Amino acid sequence: MAEPAAAVVVVGGGVIGLSVAWAVADAGYRVRLVDPTPVRGASWLAGGMLAPVTESWPGEEHVLELGSASLASWPDFAARLTVAGGDPGLRPDGTLAVALDAADAATLEVLAEFLRGLGRSAVRCSARELRALEPGLGPGVRSGLHVPGDLAVDNRALLTALHTACRRSGVEFITTAARRVHPNAVTLVDESTVECAAVVLAAGAWSGQLHPALAPLVRPVKGEILRLRARPGALPVPTRTIRAHVESRPVYLVPRHDGELVLGATQLDVGFDEAVTAGGVRDLLRDAERVLPGIAEYELTEIAAGLRAGSPDNLPLIGTLEPGLLVATGHHRNGLLLAPVTATAVVSLLRGTAVPECVRAADPARFTERNT
Image (cartoon, rainbow, N blue to C red):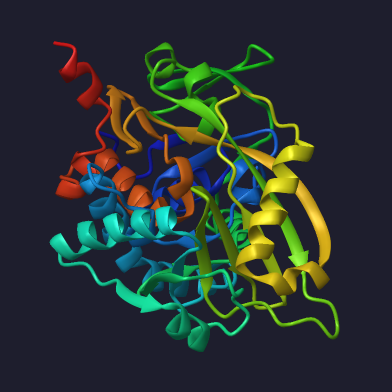
C-alpha cells in the first residue's frame, strides 16, 4: 500500500497511536503523529490489565483469540520497548477473578465453562485457596478463578516509554487537533492540511467524529478510575490483579510495583461526558472494600474519568477503511492488551502483506458486509 520511506500520518497519541507510530517508524516509514495532547486520554487512565481470558465471554470468541495472540507477543514487545524507550512495568503475576455471592459465582461458572470448552487455562478456587494466594481478600469472597497466564502493565510507564521510543525513532509530533481525516491527508482544526502516502486513524473514542463511516461504529464509553496508595502500617497491595463481581457489578484492582493500586471499572454510555460522579466513586470504593478490606487504610491519590472507544461487537476496527486510509480504533477495554498486535497489523497493511486470521476478524469491512 505504501512504499518504505513514504510519509505516514498517525492520528491519535494514546497507546494504540503511539505503538503504531513506533512500529511504522521502525519499519522505515517517515511518521508524523497528530494529537494535541499525546500520552494522555483514556490510555493514561487505564488499569493496565492484559487479561484476555478474564475479559472473555461466550459469543466473543474472536475477541479472546485476538487478545490471546497479542498477549503472547507482550513479553517481546516489552523487552524491545525497554531498550528503545524505557521499562513499561510488565507484571507476570496473573489474575484472580472472584465472586462474593451466589449470582456472582454463577457468572464466573459460565466463564469457566466457556474457557474450558475452548481449552483455556483457568483454575477454579475455593475461598480458602484464594486467600492462600492473596491473604488480603475479604471474608465475603466465596469462590473464584486463578488465571496465572494473565499479565499487567504500568500504563503510564508504558505511554512514557512509547513516547520516548517514537521520538528516538524519528516520529514528528504535531500538537494540533485533527478536524477530519481523508485518504492520504489530514485536515487540522486550523484548516491546514497534512498530506501523506497513508493515514492511520487511531484517535480512540474521537475516531467517529473524524470520518463519517466511523460515526455509527465507534462510541465513547465512560470509565471512572481511582488511584490509591498503601500507607505505612496498612496491608500491602496484592501481588496479582483482582477482578471481582460484587452483586453483579464489575470491579478491578490492579497493583503497581511502587505500592499504588488502580481501581475501576464503571462503564457508562453517556457520550463525551468526562465528569467524575460522586455515585461512581462511592460504588467503586464500597465494592472494592468488600473485596479487599485493607484499602480502607489507603491514601486516595487520584479520581478521574476517561473515554474508551467502544464498537458494536467489542472487537476493534483494524484494517483499510478506503485506499490511503487505515483505521486502528474501537479497542474498548483492551487498548493496552491489543497494542502489539494492532501495531504489527498496521505495518503489514502498509506493506500490502497478509495480517493474521485473528486480525482479519477485526476488519471494519465486516460491518458493511452485514448490510449488503
